[in-house]
Length: 83
Image (cartoon, rainbow, N blue to C red; front, side, top):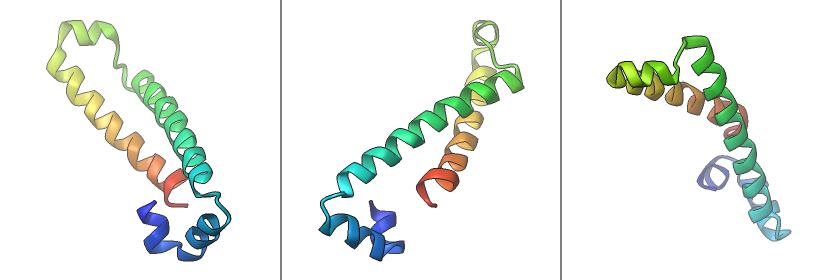
């Protein structure tokens, strides 16, 4: 919502006046979550991050998962949130 308020004022005002802001934010959130989880799964597969790795080397698994989540989050921001 802050992004709309500060960077897309016209869109924010239009959605607010027409009582569509909450619906729009819910749609964006749903799209963002779906894309995030899809990207995480794809990146895990591409990087070979498995449950076996988690059991064998938890610290490495956590590091890889943190990197994957950060990359996926950045993509989601650029593709869904900040468009």
